[in-house]
Image 1 (cartoon, one colour):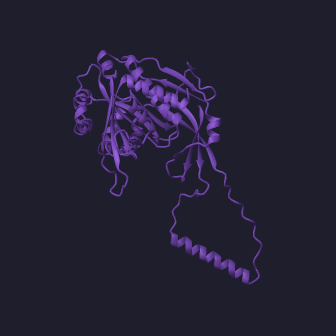
Image 2 (cartoon, rainbow, N blue to C red):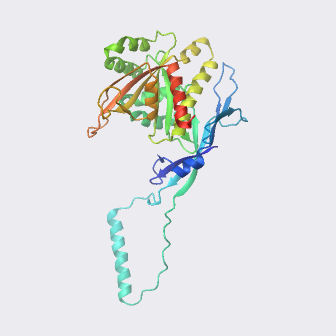
Image 3 (cartoon, rainbow, N blue to C red):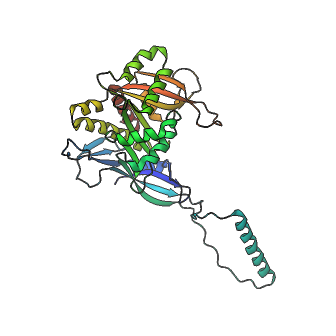
Length: 366
């Protein structure tokens, strides 16, 4: 396990933890971390050997090193963090009626007042002051393959994108089925999903209604100057297949975890191609282009390239794309005042790898 400066704020004992960015002190202390990954995907019909990779990110000199580690029974990449319980929130999970609480309170106050007036009140022990110090719980973050137990977590994250929300269940199923190329950020204690990244082949999944719907949106909203290129990418007739690049996560997932999430997706793609069962499967996994539908908002300028992306890494992908265009996305709720947009980012494999290098430099500082 690797302990990094990641904190949670527990609003109550029944609520899902919400990720809170670490303080400057935590960042300074916990910048050094290492990540461990062992891939257990099978090779051929007889099953292949697992692949294990250890990556170390350091803040001291911005250096990075990778080496093989000892085998482990856990096939997941594990990071360590901590959960901080909010001291201002009661630990009780029981719901009481406000009227009953008020009645009990008034009765107790009345009895205390009566005892005091009769001169029979006894000295009471001073109450112990509640500690304002947060409760710290160690937790492990796990980067693992998509699994059916993550269905509801995946669907919830996908549903937050208004373009994907009508097909959230189908897309969650596709991500789970496509477990050779995809990574889920979770914990080893439950089935919560804090983020995921996956690439879905446009050709092999052409019959899927949600894939067809997304292709139609991309073509209908595509400006005339990119129409021919977009049709070529989505046609399935390119030398290398194109894929829809899905990635969703909690907005305040730390930079380090975000970079590792993308790193694991790249490792998955490379490993899947190298260990494909046959030539057809190898071709279907060797992606040459990526189409990303990124949520964004209108910038202050209001002109071209003024979008403010929901996820900072989408801006890096956009700067390394072949072309980008934006259209108005449907509102999630009628009362939403902020105008939501969707940016279609079309990258080649070369552009995607260049973006990964830029992301690594941004996070690691080298």
